[in-house]
Amino acid sequence: MTQTTHPTRLERHTTAAGAEVAVLTVAHGKLNLFDQALFDAVIADTAALVAAPPRAVLIRAEGKVVSGGVDVHLFDGLDAGQGAQLWQDLFAQIIHPLEALPCPVVFAAHGLTLTAAFEISLACDIVLAAPGAKFGLVETVVGLTPSMGGPQRLAERAGSGRARELVMTGDLYDAETLRSWGVVNAVHDDVDSAARALADRLADGPTRAHDATKQIIGAWRSGGVAHADSETPEVSGALFDTDDLKGAVRSFLTVGPGKASYTGR
Image (cartoon, rainbow, N blue to C red; front, side, top):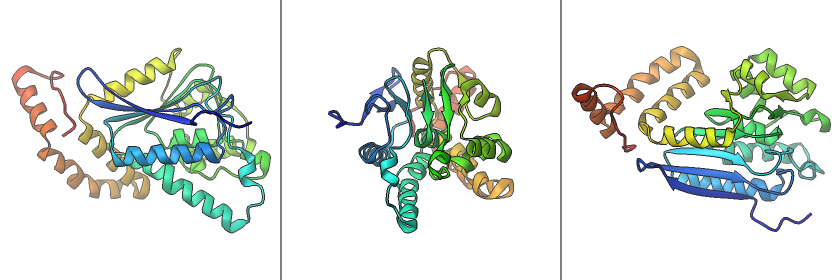
């Protein structure tokens, strides 16, 4: 069926404290299927976020489900080289840029979250879910393995044994199970409101320090504790030149903890 509206919306708002938050909403038919139009829209939105980073990002969806997965028509007729190029492009244009954004990225899952949508959530910093949300990497139904980084990022959060189980069985897992595994950070009855509130709260915080946290954890992900230790002094040291750290230290010493406000600079 032909879609009559744009597959996504990228909207920005400002918190009461003056921090910009970007909300990327998927709204692409009943199933929010990742066809070429939706992939192209998410790629364009990601590029816009990279070009003008806010101080926090929320990724969410409208409709009954977050996403029913990928439109299998995209895979029909591809050869090995074309398949490899597809995944290389999706890493380069969605997954890696999202992970590298210099601000917190929150994902809200209110319902069924399959394949590409689940993999995108795993590239975010914090994943919130509704009690009825279900998650699956079900690529085995077409003889494929998840190839947008899902298995390795799932293994990082839940352990390699859990990742193999989830991917190889192709089963669906509920939000509370994945919370107990460390994949979902928290479960909320009103996940959309909770996610919006969290994104606003994080945006109001010390954005440069949040970026430093992401860089240090990124160093650990790529090279372990020793590599992260080697990167931390320079990454963290640079914060002493930021207005936010200087102002927060003065605020702490003058009026005590928890009173500082941040500008992201």
